[in-house]
Image (cartoon, rainbow, N blue to C red):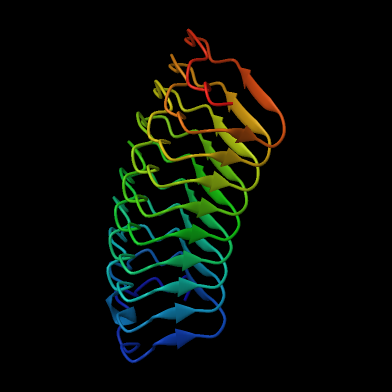
Length: 232
C-alpha cells in the first residue's frame, strides 16, 4: 500500500487474520489510521511502515502477535509512541526504529519478549527513553542505539538478559549513564560506547559478567569513571 495520496484509512480489510508474506505501508500522506487491520494476528514476512506523514498511532495492529521478518518504522514524523502493538510477542528478524521525529517513548511493546536478529534505534530526535520494552529478555543479534539526542534513560530494558551480537551506544548527546540494564548478564560481541557527550558514568550494568569480544570506550568527553563493570 504505497503512494496512495487520498488514502486515509485501511477500510475493507477487517477480516484479514494472516499475511503469508509482507505488509508494506509507505508514503501515504493522508493516512491517519490502521484500524482496518484489527483482526490481523500473524505476518509471516516483513512489515514496513515508512513515511506516512500524519499517522500518529499504530492502533489497528492490536491483535498482531508474530512478525516473521522485520518490523521497520521509518520516518513517520507524528508518531508519538507504539501503542497498538500491545499483543506483539516475537519479531523473528529485525526491529528497526529510525528517524521518527515525534516519537517520545516505545510504549506499546510491553509484550515483546524476543528479537530474533538485530535491534536498531537510530536518529529519533524526540525519544526520551525506551519505556515500553519491559518484557524484552533477549536480542539474538546486535543492538545499535545511535543519535537519539533527547534520550536521557535506558529505563525499559530492565528484563533484557543477553545480546548475541555487537552492542553499540553512540552519539546520544544527553545520556548521562547506562542505568536500566539491571538484568543484563552477557554481551556476546564487541561493545562500543562512543561519542556520548554527557555520559558521566557507566553505572547500570551491575549483573554483566561476560563480554564476548572487544570493549571500546572513546570520545565520551564527560566520562568520570568506569564504575559499573564490577562483575566482569
